[in-house]
Image (cartoon, rainbow, N blue to C red; front, side, top):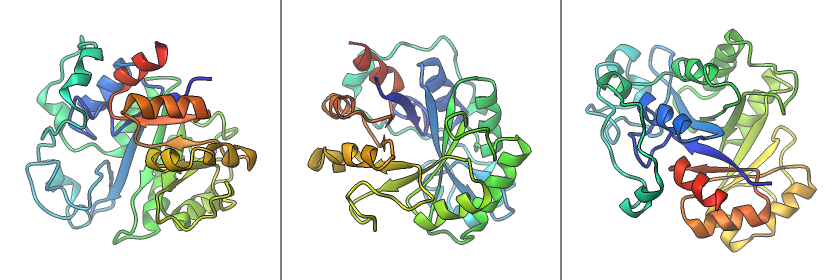
Amino acid sequence: MQPAVVAHRGASAHRAEHTVAAYALALEQGADGLECDVRLTRDGHLVCVHDRRVDRTSTGRGVVSTLTLERMSELDYGRYDAAMPDSADDLVREPVWTPDPNDYGVLTLESLLDLVADSPGTTLFVETKHPVRYGGLVEAKLVALLSRYRLANPKSKEDSPVVMMSFSAMAVRRIRQHSARLPTVLLLNQLSAVRWDGTLPRSADYTGPGVHLLRTDPDYVARAAAAGHPTYTWTVDDPADLELCRRLGVRYVATNSPATTRSLLNR
């Protein structure tokens, strides 16, 4: 089977990351899933921001956890820094839809859930960032929000339109304490404290290695599969990396350019 294509922070190679513009374009480009990072504002709202600070991605400055949603709503998140070289653009179909300035405002997780609700069959991968000021409150707020949308306890893990992810094993464990059926991904890098035999903590369903780890240890995907853990791999933009993931049987690939990745898979 071909890996499913997950838009990393939206179509972030072509639109400013974590904006409505980026996610709308990702859906138009045929992404199977959308990936986002979430953090808590000072007044308790989950917003889609990768960095601890808003400096890189907005017209403002400051730490997300010290800013209110009202203050963050005054900022423009349209600062654009391409994640891929221009040579990839020849594989990207120009969108029919044209974004307006409102599509570059701060994006709350609630708004992104509404967008996914209008796109049946799309899976949303939500990464909680750690360490953060509010610790486990992030996961508690996430489950509370998903409960409002009746998504916190799906009929089965395979049917769930939302998947929780984190580099923090403790965060993944907290989600499992709240929900027995919400699927989880334990993201991995070189410093992750896991056994590389393919096993994971009981609270984790999927393994989430960076593609750089698969280059040096391609057999890890098979070991994880033997232990009952399909693989979610980030961030796959290079054609050679994509072919490696396809050959190894990776279940999900996170990419900054869904259109390019889809085109390469269809060749």
